[in-house]
Length: 250
Image 1 (cartoon, rainbow, N blue to C red):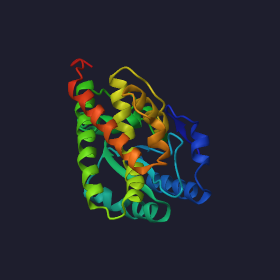
Image 2: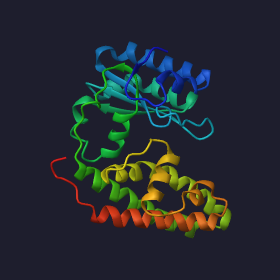
Image 3: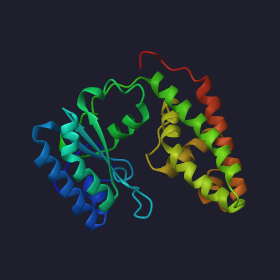
């Protein structure tokens, strides 16, 4: 597969090689199908998420793709519908479809997603529409707070709904950690602390910032301790972001 590269750790070639051959073949067929159908209307096609930053897991990960169009009329979407569905059902390739003209305007509501895509993607077609995107730190701060508070609320419900006791806590913690990677990393960056993009690095960085035991979360050998550490981490991060002052000019 011929690719262009943005900032991708590990290299694009190595990241794609981690995918099973059948997934790579389906991804290539998807790319060619979109090019043939859309022509110049295909502004860009990018892989982001776990594949791009080298954390794809065959058992649990999707292949996340962004398709950027100039024109998103219903007829255009109908024309690519079969290819999109086939990619999803055959290889768990999940496509987000954006219109080029909306990307900058929506950066205020998707700042963390766009940050992740801009920092770490594999460009399969066209030119990267995220590389020069302008995102405000104020919008980042608000989105971080929203995601952390939502995670805390949902966490309570997940535990209350479970009938499996301590074993359920282990699953709850593992699921929530994955969802917290992006907002915690963004919060650390707002605090002028940088970490690698992978989950373990982010969790260790956040736990260090709030004097918590990262191993209790990452190893989950004691589900109750892991859960208590997770709630302490989210509460500390919420308090931090709630009082964080960012430059309106950023």
